Image (cartoon, rainbow, N blue to C red):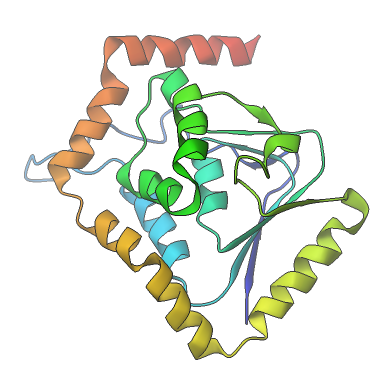
Length: 211
């Protein structure tokens, strides 16, 4: 294997975290110490950032919240010019980005792009993905898969040690900041999700999606 292409199935690339019970924001260890509820997400994102070979996101469907962070964790990002949405809507649903996700946003996007996506908390059409820095390029549907695989193969053809060394240098500071996160920092992030206003916002979102 010389490169990894990450893609979704159906209409979604990824919808992010499972908010219907997939995250326990009040979990504690066997000793009663609060644990990091975002640890699985953190480990997943770190695996992509630190992976020594090329990673290419093949964005062909909705990428929302944590799903969009997964796109941004990839070295190279290509999207199809289609009818789907992208966005970081955490603020709108009363959520706060875990440190790993926030550091990836800082790494990949300009301050202006990050501010628009994070603080505006809107969902954008795919046509806006390149402007927002989500993808490097939007491609026509009829040549999308072929182009993605061809470019992944090109990246994979580079000498492995040179690619791995250069990638490691590019992401080293971001990884160091992620790994320096203390348990109490993760708990402060989780506490944002548990406020009454935040819980109400997610409940309203769930009702909206069910109608």
